[in-house]
Image 1 (cartoon, rainbow, N blue to C red):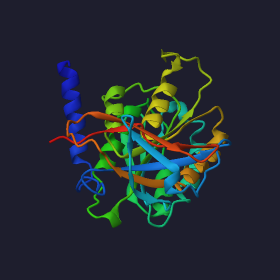
Image 2 (cartoon, one colour):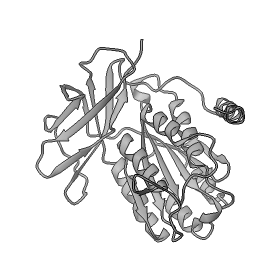
Image 3 (cartoon, rainbow, N blue to C red):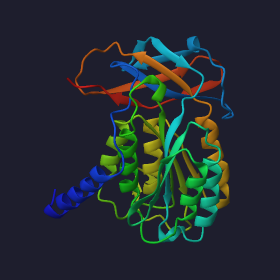
Length: 306
């Protein structure tokens, strides 16, 4: 790492340390309990709300696990709404703002959300609140300028959600990030690998919305447009979804799909049969045995360490 990058990251770390978040680690329902937010759909993508506990199978590193927690009632949510306000969004930002406002208006009374604007910088326009009016006002204040610090914004959102205080089961919240961006990261201090690692170590579901540009693709990774590759991978690893649209008018429908999914999730938990505390990655496979349905959750987790 160069001296300039080390210094820049130190400044960024100091910013995180000074952010207005405090509290303990998220309550996990027991030291060895793995909690999963699960979405079940049929072949047409319709959400299925009535799958029974005995219709799910969980495997950790190919070993079957016994379900110990099961609920069809979604927990309240703590959500970070990230909106790209770079210069390239200027013409489409008003439509994006209207779509995001429609999303926050669908929040439940017990839900909390924050609004994060990112361009060359990252600004928390509204910290966590359950007041839709305050969230709407924050979204209305977004103004397009500068370039794109997608990784910085995502890392900051992950760090903020990690610090959400929950010390009892009654305070337990699902955690999610909804990202809207129209291009590749160009100015972040944090790297993609660092953001992906932080996401995999979190309890956060990432939903990503890519608003495609008509400009030529500049870089590719593994055959993908780089921006789409990044958004798709973050969503897949955390159990969320990635959406890509060509027209800003489609954003309202996408935000509606995300809101419907968050309102239709199951909470499923198990006590891992692997008692080693080695910090290793453990892959999770979750299946619905009901015909013509598919279950989706995060790809795995890192075990605790001694």
